[in-house]
Image (cartoon, rainbow, N blue to C red; front, side):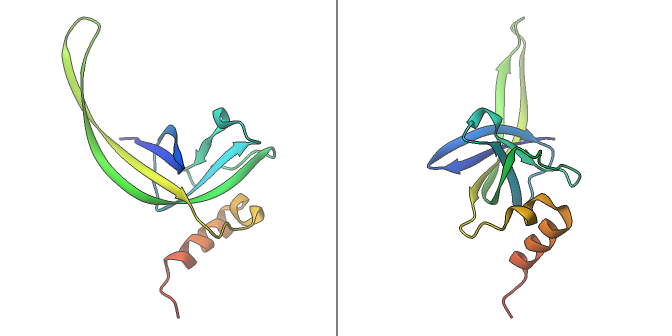
Length: 115
């Protein structure tokens, strides 16, 4: 089941349908063109050279039931997962967000209790 994801920047941006919704997620965008907003939810996803990366943390998640009718009038419904993300205040360097191993280490460090 995919997760419908929004990025909270004052107002919600998205929605994006993603296969994964981890606690920390890299969003990407070309310049200031909101229509290019995407997320790197798969471990093998990588940003293109023109995309800028943004680190965000999941701040809310839920399940929503949608009740619908087909064009023929048949009723149907489905459950969808939703998640909302907010940009982290201390953004890691672009080099960290562009490299999967460095990104994973950054995430792990954020989850580790302070020493």
